[in-house]
Length: 460
Image (cartoon, rainbow, N blue to C red; front, side, top):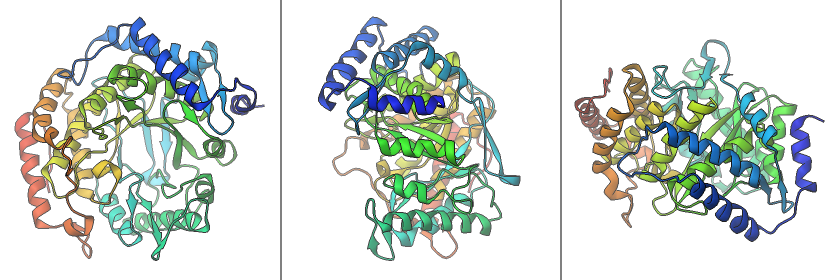
């Protein structure tokens, strides 16, 4: 048997525990043990840490946790355990380069380093955001037409000609098929047919995901998601998704949405959990690269301080001790048509870029509504590539981040949120171009970022 099948089989032979016991005995208690053992803490004014000893401690703590817990298969109520040697082998085997897409649009992802001058990949789109069928195609086109975009993702289609998409239903397979057909059509129209895609976002189960595994839809050179649930939990459905790599050749993107303030505690414990998730995903998810998507228990967004610190500390930890391809999700609180969305996007892009990550987004309004557009994706890409090109240091980056936090942090706890406007209110649906008000707002924020020290080269 391949190692992957060996690990899967442990879902049927490993120790059996209840989900409640898993959460408390394995996650809460064991995470607290390693956090206390290594005296892990964080400074909310230093969003981008620079302490090499801290990074080493996070790495050791995460490896200990991954061995102590393993992963919990909620479908079988059994623990998939890993040895230290297996975790080490998985770390050593993590791809340092990965080719995505085909032809002239093929793109090679690399394991970036701390303060790396190599540009981050710009993975544009509103990943997994629920999107009415009528808006799906224009939103994707608004992103794919941006020259700064290297790779493409998209939202989740929620209706087929007005019929609600349902889980494990014909509508799910229809939604995934339509998603990929429209993505392919748009890329052909824009002259970028070979661009690599993270797709099958409309799948709610493995049924939809597998329906996309066709060379004319989701190609072997594209990728799909293998999700871990909170915390360090997987199910049989995601093992089926992972197996598609063995059988079809598609790239596997592990996704962990560790919760800051949740079972692992504050940012340090959540960071250890995220790192342990990735170590385990190397084995049971057969991961080619990792998506880092922290969620704050109250503020949700990846632009909350604790989530920003987690992304920075995690990317730096792997860059320093086990280089890997890590893509940071950007899911702000705000929606299109607001300055806060642009500030949040810039902050997340700065933090991930100087810490060694790549950029994916933008999943506006916590990824809940289609109040998104290609314009904030443009900003994400321009900021990320400028920060890398000018070789911005972590100290300067942290100073800019603190200034930007002051411009948007007030909305993170606002009961009303900051939903902004739907795509069709900020973009012209005929030309797929930003309307004047949204364009002007972008230009104002662009100029502010230049004044703060980001050497941006282009504007609207």
